[in-house]
Image 1 (cartoon, one colour):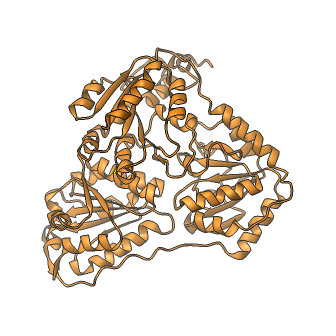
Image 2: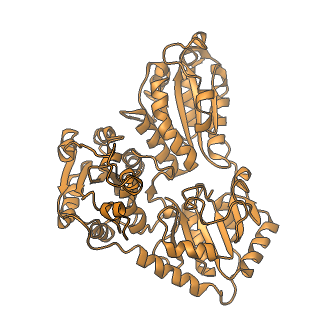
Image 3: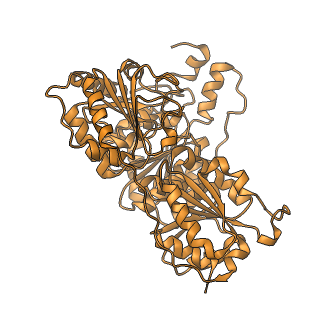
Length: 550
């Protein structure tokens, strides 16, 4: 006989869970008690949104579901921000929510929410466990749903009294991963379409990749000398210094790359959904019939043909498809090889940062310093804002699993993602990029990094405004600044008050020494970079946008 709380923890251990993030609540005390001597690490967070984003980052970097636990009502709705990120980004995650006791249901009891109605758009499946004997069944299903097809988050709600019930239940077993493979005829059709193409383009994206799959695809690209792009915030899927790399495909795309994609006669989308952000606002391919021939490989059949009608649709996970094409042999002299080299040269020019700009701090030289002084396997995290352009455009990702950033454009993601990444890979350097507006969304999780001794380095770009919104505001309503100016704390004092290390950079050449001191401190650190609000993008100032000049 075991309690429902004990059965939850046993099911997690059976499925290999080593860590959970949480904000505690009285609604799931029985689970917290069962975790006490379980051997599972519990990261105690300060806000449920941050806890959920940590679970997302674990799922993003491991391919296994990140686990988050929160209490009912306000706790669950706070966590919905991280749930939304995981859903739009196809990240495996399981959110456990303490629920009101069963005999109080449908009375609008204290903090009661009907999650099967409220969270349908936020998760692949929302279930409630009314009978503790069914816990192994529900948890096994949760892991299977979160990881199969198009991965995503699952929500399981746990009535408080159910978790205290003493019951007999089957011993929990690990879920069985489900893989999808291309058929032999589909591989043959793929090879024929590629050989017939004169201007092919590969776009990598999505999840369900592995280090081996990334390495094997690089070998394929080298043999066939095809141009390769990575979709929005999936840049870690291909080495940016490889001669086949053409650039990132998404918002703020290199105009030269956008033209090449539109002029291609064959697009191969591997693992990517190509929704609004990766498709540059649905401008790169015509809907529903692209002018280019389209091969779309994706592990969920519901996504194939959902927006773009493919000429060849293959239901397969990226790793399985790459394995299937790894033995194909290229033409003796691929006619597109010269084009691939030219596209890589265009990427190198595009990703070279400007040396100057308005104000006393210039982000271009700072990015150059980072490129020269940060290890190749360093993990970069960020949330959303114009500041993120400096990472996406000018940092050259070299290795798999070095990026944790939301394709959904969620502010506040970078700091909790960095906490999770450092907890997962303690020997690797983890750098969080954040704007002043973005950082304050989940800045309280800096104390989580301090508590668990996770020396992340946050590059906090402070321009005193919600920069992206201000940019659009000046474009559409020039000179009428409303709702976008910010008043910020002293971020150096903030870092010190939390027990971390703080630096302020007011001139460009101060950044390198400040970073080295932050690194040497061995503490979580904030480097506040005082950027002029005029430096709103790498190439345009606010004044230019307001005046509609180049």
